[in-house]
Amino acid sequence: MTTADAAHHSPSAIDLDGRVFAGVSNSPTGQVSGATRFRYHQDDPVVWAEYEGGEVVLGFLVGTRTGARLHFRYVHLGVDGTTASGVCDSRIELLGDGRVRLHESWAWESRPETGTSVVEEIG
Image 1 (cartoon, rainbow, N blue to C red):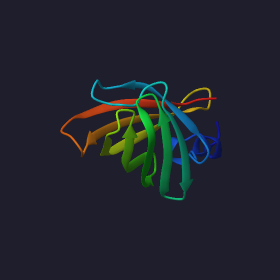
Image 2 (spheres, rainbow, N blue to C red):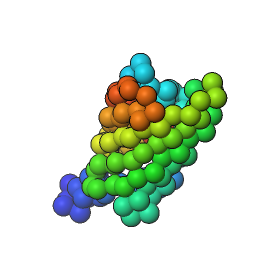
Image 3 (cartoon, rainbow, N blue to C red):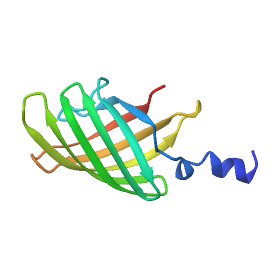
Image 4 (tube, rainbow, N blue to C red):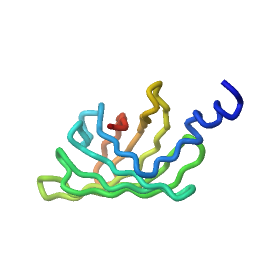
């Protein structure tokens, strides 16, 4: 692999715009599941996504990206009619088949729990 190929395959170089992710794993106090779909957008360091499915009626996240790291806040409406919000830091991983996996560490701001989750590109 050339230096240019390595840079193209670096998690820092992966564009998230247009990628769709689903939950793979989550802490018990999280609300994201395999039924949740995230539609990511990226404009340079700005990242945002809409998400829905499972326990989530509609949600949004917005934040920034530095290299292979994301930092964002999220807010969503649950199927039980309550709103929830929090903050998340994610690490981008490039899988061998070219898909992207995000390793997330999150904390609710609307309640006391924290946790970790993994979402993975589908398709």
